[in-house]
Image (tube, rainbow, N blue to C red; front, side):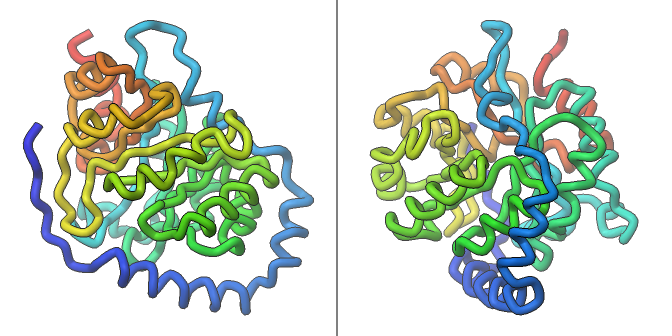
Length: 283
């Protein structure tokens, strides 16, 4: 698949700078001790790692289906998603019925139209584990993710130093959260590679984002080009640019059996039906 050019309106650096301001405001509004008290009232997180690495059939790809209202490059994905009554649980149920293995939920409000409260609403509606997808750059956000019901968190390597990434992975493990550590460029992948499976194999997934966050271009073949330096494809998640059943087949032929798919599903009037077609093709 060739590259798709979007219309970038904001840079990754801008988003992260804004996120740090948000974090300081969140810390003032809800101190860490309050988050810890919230966590004490929760049960153990669902097993996100197990949900996406178990394959009952040779032709199965585990799809992490994403709930995403808008993006900085594309704006509101569908006009109806602008409605203040937008209900992520409705889409989550449709994804579950169509065969999703897990859910990814955007929680960034300003750039992606998300909300931390969506996570509990999704978990109350379906039994699948939920990934908090956001720009996590501070330990406070890991505690916050656990307190608001997430089963897994996204860590974007391009936003973090190696030391920061490792510290966040350790904290995620201590809170029984799976960490999906996302990379795009070769430099980031080489930084992450020695830490795959750390601090415990069953709590860490490696993601390759086919979208370049600097140029906002998307190319599915990017995952395939990076495979040679991935030691364990069984924990590899291909993210972005996956739009058809044939794309899943292509990835699976190279040993990649986990995919995160968002905008291609959310652009359809019926995201659940779109996921069914993605998973099953003409069957």
